[in-house]
Every structure is written in structure tokens, then in C-alpha cells.
Length: 567
RNA sequence: GGAUCGGUAGCUCAAUGGUAGAGUAGCGGCCUUUUAAGCCGUGGGUUCCGGGUUCGAGUCCCGGCCGAUCCA
Image 1: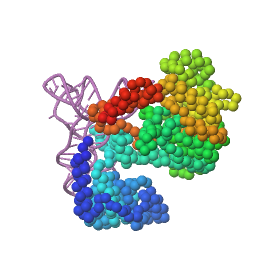
Image 2: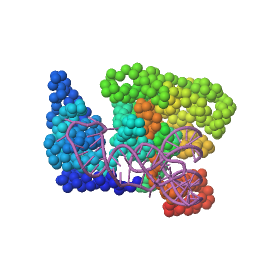
Image 3: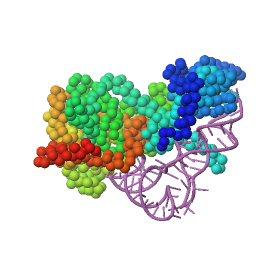
Image 4: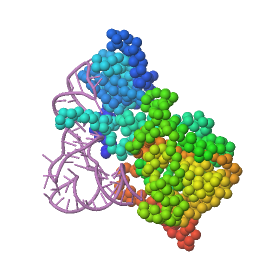
């Protein structure tokens, strides 16, 4: 794709022609203007004030708008433009008599995608279209590339058909600005995302929660099972990890004496990209002192319902208060999800028994079932049992369901039930087989926490689990020693919630700029990239605590390091 | 990581191994109430990249890049 093409050249010539007319093609200041939706309302009330006989004479004088030109219909010495701003579209009419000769010369140099400002009188045309009859025109911004607009064509049978533009998902995501420009429904979806986040924020602050910001770069990654992104701080001379979860910092705030805190921000996980995973994604986490996983279920339902209400209210242009719980049925992935009703609750062991036909404590049976399912058997029994549950049951959790009471060994940050140390007070929320939220009664015993962290690190080493933590966060344990009140904590994936509430199947459609590989990679660059990654991986291994002390390793590491630098 | 599918004009798409085309957008002309305006004329291509087979490759083969879907 060349930067210089006939389209660009034509536009550059028009840009220069504007300059020659004394018109700045990149105007600095925009005169006062009103948004299009507001003007339409004003015109409607002006019309309503007229009698049926004089209705056609309704007009609103002295109004100004600004926006992007996305259609240009030239009728001899008159011009009809479709002008768009964030709130809508309005037709703009120009002619020499009313708008002036200079304006017509400006119109000669107008392209689709340009921004203009126009002032005049609102009136209906003969065809009935509300139109700004322009008395004053200002040029604001020249666009040098063509907006990829949807168009209409006539097929062999003479039928008119419409053709969407910019349908290639790759282009739509790489150049989201064009996607937003030409697809109103995409703009609406992201506006809804903003509404949803605002609704959650309002809901929580309304319940006395305080929004906080905790570090995005952690010296020890923790709070979840995931591979982190590694980065380096030069001045401190240390590696830092992009956070995989804010959990351990938020709980330090409970130690400090805050009772209800939440954070809505990005987490980073170094894993694959698919329909429900982007390497950076938005998470809402909250912690409530003196709460537990029961209070977390209550708040989860309330919060999701509140966000759903905000979406319905937006769709119907009504006040949130007007939305009934019975209207909160959302269709997603071919299911009708009733968010107005209480969510179902089902026990972990019960679900495993129902769908896999095995008792969670019967290791032989669970292992046999895993083999039968083709799951690779490994030393971590509880992870294996979890994989069996995953394979047999998760896809059956279609309607909103709290899966509750997990085995304690897979819940290193969760308090066990008072009457059963093997069962942890944890739940995950599923809809359409997809995990939305994760919550528990927070473990606050420092000695027990240290024991579980240590066990987790050891087990991770044994099973060579790349997602397991490599190091115990002693600083967090020390924080618990200062005393953390009993508490409930909750994490809710915002991207997935937005997907569900906007009936979208891919996370890429609810993230403005989803991650992709770089464009235009040639063979040499690709090889270099692979070599760098291979060298980095090798270095990581050579520098691991297990290998570092082996004789000769340090020298090899140094050689690899030098080779890496030359790549 | 594996399998399958895809990448052709700004955009949406055609093209048995045989001159790369259409609609739309662009450019020129006509038209002072049109409306995804209309009419007449006209320019526009690294067919993702690199090799190979062939008299001849957008098409077949090999490798690579990017994306989509499914699986792990």
C-alpha cells in the first residue's frame, strides 16, 4: 500500500487550493456551535409550535454546527452535504446566493472526511429533510485519506444492494479510528462500555466503596496463576513484573484500615490471544472488611444487575429507574440470560459428581476419569480434578451460576470453611460456560498463608508449571502479620461483562485497540524475532536458581547474553 | 503450538493455468431542494512477500508474513 496515490494527491491539491483562497486547511479555532441532536430537538419543538397549516414554515435561525462531511451531493450550483458529529447527522445546504461565492469555492475543494463549521437557518427541504441552509461556512480540517464508507450498488438484476465497508477484522482492529468513523454500531458499543464501567463505579461508591490505584509493576507477581510480562527498571537495577492481579496490594489496604476499596484497571497476562483473552484486560477488584464470600455473591449480583440496567436504559433512552428487573434478559452466545433473577448456586464437589460421576476425594476414580477424558495425568492432583471438572461441566453452566466451595488446595488465598478445612469459601461466576468473576472469604492467617505460598512454589517447581508463582511474597505475609480483618474479596472481568451485555462474541470487539502482531514483517525480521525470543528464553533458564550454581553455566550464560546483544 | 480457511484497485468483490475486471470511491463535464442523487466521459494494480514448475501463474507447488475460526 503506497502512501502516495491518486486520492492523496487530489486531496493535497485541494488543500493547497484552499490555502491559496486564504482558507486555513487546518483551522485553529472553531466558532461556537451546538450539537446536532440538540438542534434537532429545537427544530422539532419549533415545528410543534406551528399550526398544521403553517408547519412547513417552521424554522430555527442563527444556529451553527461542526462536524465531518461524509456525503457530498452536488446539484449544479447547489451543494448538499451530510455532516456528522458525535450525536448524529444533519444535512447542510450551500448555494452561491445564500452562502457566498467564496464558500462555493471552498465547497469545490471539499472531500469526504473533511471537517467544516456551518451557520444558518434550520428548515425542511421540499423532500422533507431537516436541513441547515448555510449563510456562513468555515473550513476546519482537510482529510488526506478516503474514509472507507459503506456504499450501495446495483446488481445485474437491477436490485439495489448495500455493501458494508471495512469488513476485514484485521483492518478494523489495526485502524480502529476508521472502524469507528464508518460504523455507528461500533461507536455505540464502546459508548456502552463506558456506561457499564460508570455504572459499576457508581454502584460501588454508592455502597461506600473507595476507588484506589495500586501498582501496575510488581517486584513479585502474585494474586493469580498466570505468566507475567517481565520488564526492567534501570535505576533500581531490578526486574519488575506487569501485574497479573492487584489483589495482594488491595488487601494491604485492609490491613491499613480502609474497609471498602475497589480498583478498576488493567491486568497483564503473558498468554495466548483468543475470543476471550487479550494480554491486557480490565479487571474490577473489590475488598470488604468484615465481609465474606456470601456478601460477595450479593454484591456481584447487585453490580451486574445495575450495569445491565444501565445498558437497557441507554438502549431505550430512558432513565435507569424506569427499568424493571424483568427487562434484564440478555441474549448472548445463543442463550437468553436472565440477569433479573437470583443466580443459581452449585457446589464444586456436587457438580463434579453430577457430570463426571466421581467423588472429589476418590483420587483413583478422578485420575481414571481424567485418563478416560484424554487429560494428561500429572502430580498435582487438585489441578487434575479441576481439569476434569473443566472438561465435563463448565460448558453446562449456561445461566448465571455461582460455582461455590472449591477444594482448599487450589485456593491459596482463600479461607477454609469453619467446619471443613478441605473446602474453601470461594466461588466463581459462570455464564455461557465462561468465567466472569472469582471471589472468596480472604485468608488472613499469616502463618497459614506462608505455608500455602511455600507449598504452591514447591509444587510449581515439581510440576514445572509455568503459571505457578516462583517466589513467596514475604512482604505480603508480613502485612498479614499486622492483622487483616476478616474480609470478602471479588474480581470481575470487565471485558467479558461488556461482551455479554452488548451481545458480542469476541473480546477484540470490546477492546478499543486489541493486540496484534506487527504488520509488514519480512522473513529476516521474523527470524530475528524468533532468535531473540529463543535467546531470552534460554537466558531465563540459565539464570534460574536451579541452574545458576552449576559449574560452567555462568560462562555459557555470558556467551548467550553477548550473542543476544548482537541480535 | 497444531489443523482449516483467507489476503486482488481507496472500499466491497469477480477473474477454467491464457489480455487482471465490475460496483462504488477518484478525476473531467452537465444539473440551484438533492439525499447512500442522476446523466456523459475517463484515469487507477508490487494480485501479501520470496522461490519453484510451466511457452505462460492472481490461479499449481515449496517457504515466509499477517489475519480469522476450531483444537491444545
